[in-house]
Image 1: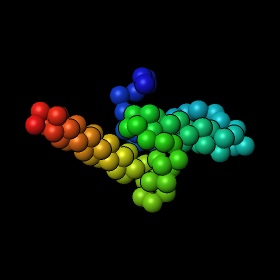
Image 2: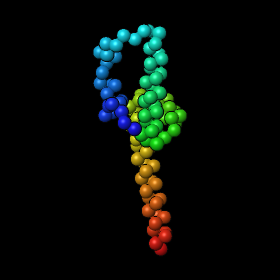
Image 3: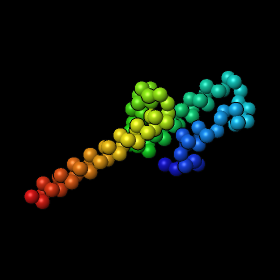
Image 4: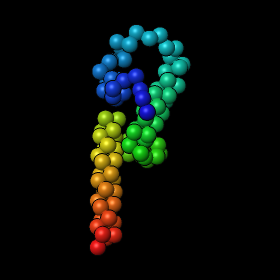
Length: 96
């Protein structure tokens, strides 16, 4: 998935809300907050190969989005490593 930012979480955290200078009606703030959150969850899910509900559950248990992003990245790497080890074991068994 391509995004206009290198890392959406870092890009968003580097700009304070008061620096955005965007006129959003106060009645729309929650709508756009939900959209942004949903897009961020979807991005993490696609990037790390997890279901969006799993990403949301991990997020709820941690202190912030950055920690959830890091945790999901760690889990993705761990799963990939375990999968590679399993494949290597299968190949070794076939060779024997």
